[in-house]
Image (spheres, rainbow, N blue to C red):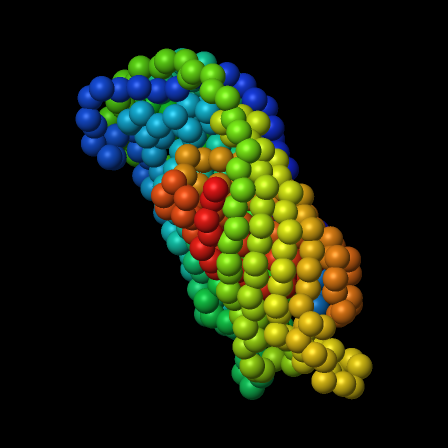
Length: 379
């Protein structure tokens, strides 16, 4: 499993497993949506991590870039914010020079960002404007664009990203260095990952590690009343979902193979933040038919293309959003060359009491298999 995936899972478990009775926030006054916000510019300096020997020759210099951060700690009552020690949420725009403009080019991204505080809860830490030692772990997801995708004619020596449009994932540590009522300085480390989830090959992806300083202005602080959460009982839930996706297989510039997934999941919620579950999966990955024909020299029937599996998983709840990590094992798989185990990392959004939308990435350890987009029913 890749370093980035391991770090994301560690962050998920770190913030989700403790079932603490934390404090909430309640404010009867309607405030500006920009209250308690931080608008900053952050220069970055780092390098593209050569996570595989296939891209070592492409790392030709240091990377540098700039981020534009628009984040807020909130000004209205949100139960989930109290549970996570009042995190920050917002948008980050990031422009990166990879250090190899001819083969890797520039990367541009826009991501939704969640900055989870590492400090223990204390009212003074929320209201203080001084250098109080507050620090965060940040997680971001969004869309990214690279100016130099792999191209057979013009960029064939950079088998990194087969598409201009990619998924951008961010993991960041940051700390407050200096703060006043209207100004703040922070510093930290960011790892920025680009990948298209095997929608196009090649798909080795890029990982950029950088240190940064951010300087920004703060909007007026809004006082918040803090009240303890009530303790509720948590029950079991069942859900079924259907997903679609597409992928390529080598050689590059091939056809897009449609993928269909059917998933059943049984969950037990153990706290406001955490659920554990188990499920059954059925995958119809049409690229498996071509792979079997190449390997075994026969036209496989439909049942040989079908893959069945069972999984266990963990869910971290953020109000209507859910962050899901699943690890599965194939119960039926004629292909077998990808191994016995598969993994999923995804997001679910509850549209109503029963309906939800979700997106996820299915992988075999560090190798992406395909992305999934779908709808489901919770009962």
